Image (cartoon, rainbow, N blue to C red):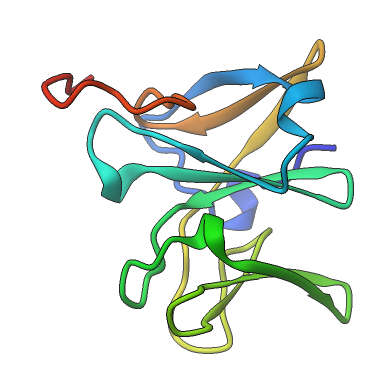
Length: 134
């Protein structure tokens, strides 16, 4: 039910497991934006598709488009999210696209019904105050 790992390309150096919330609640939407106190370039999308959670950087590597607003499609067994701005597609497991562009993906795990994401900064389903940086 969780996906992604260090072997899948997730950069986990200096990262910690961050509690996001109960899987029963998070699985009600296909994508949720998780805010980072570091700033919008460090925000993460938490996807829930076909019974699995995936996490990747929230801004498209091409031009910064909001991937949480993108369409999710499956083709040949590969789940991809497509940026709503320029239609770049990224594999939800690996972050790879059909171009040289690649999204950072993050490891996700379930423990006792809760979803955790391995990330260098704290993550929240609500925006952090503008002056908070950790």
